[in-house]
Amino acid sequence: MKQRLPGLLFLTLILAGCSADEHDHPQLKTGKQLYDYHCAGCHREDGSGLFLKGVPANRDTDLSAWQIMHKVKEGEEGDTRMPVFARMPEQEATRIALYLKELGR
Image 1 (cartoon, rainbow, N blue to C red):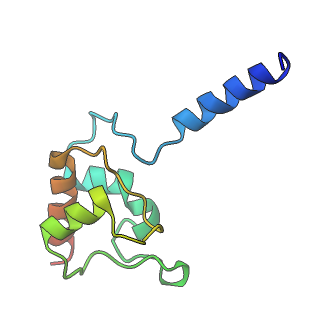
Image 2: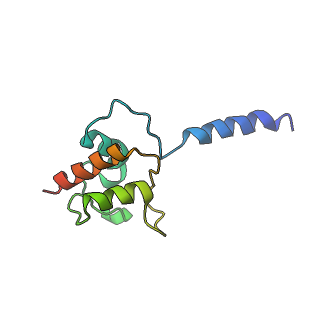
């Protein structure tokens, strides 16, 4: 058991650092910066998505800003493809949503 303890401790520390819901980034202030940090990895920087991987475009979405915020912070029931950012501050989600609405114009 003593031999396993260091390995288990290491694994716990690694897993604790792997969170899609990380929000310790005070240097990110604009909607674009926040979008690039949280969303562009899947939806691409221009919001065109990755069709062949099943990632929809989000630049021309018909969703309202409130619906985008809800999807980002709470997700949709049964949809496990997109990470949910439950700890994201409301202000941050609002900036991302408004940036997306501008991106589609």
